[in-house]
Length: 306
Image (tube, rainbow, N blue to C red; front, side, top):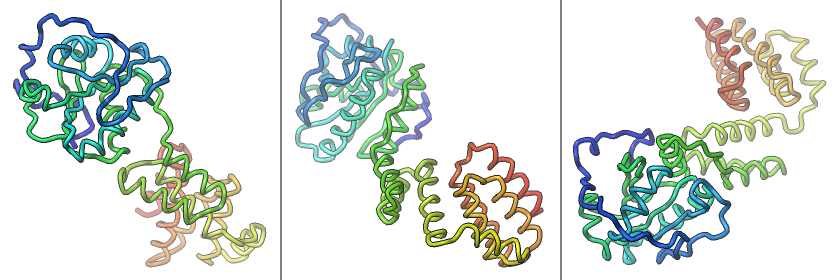
């Protein structure tokens, strides 16, 4: 998959010549039509394009349904064929995400067997091949099957390039993981979060969820009052202070936990110091990188270390 940041690279050098398609074409019916690779989602909420989410496109309708439509609504073009097994993996995911978008963007499906000239113009050498068209021009593309999480990120970049502000739908996989965590099924939650991170290693929500699983496991069976008392009784008891910091985070006193461990970093050295540092960083992950308290604590940690 290409870099999810929208670029013009190959397109500005004329790799895709759409001039032959810029001829008037009969305006087709606007409602979505069923896709041969799966049923077209119906009942999607009305969006910027009247609720249209998935359409089948031919050479005759390409100008109106893709080029002209992309002047107001980003269009993602999916080149596929009935015999293509990878297409049958990717197309249903694209259709699902298009339905979730509710018209914020439109999925245009092109059967390469029925429309070989279109495939030739886009220099499609293998399928599935997916192009994003914004403002009447291709802006980015990828080939092959990609994980859903990366596909969501790519589509969001396409929407940004098209100047579309759309509320991102929730990720059902993340909802499932969060539900397992709330119910105390830590094994199921960990498995779900790790699966998301395997597909999208930078997913901050999944990273935070996994850190919460670790925190929940560490404090299981701990008496909060006793943990805090043990740390207060011995300023140099590393394990006691790590546990106390966990308790403080769970009780909503994250800033106190950060301050405790930064102070402990200053008082320790060698392996103990590294243990404390790693523990503090794991607590940062629970809150997420955008938390102001985390940013402040990171600065304090850097000062303590150097």
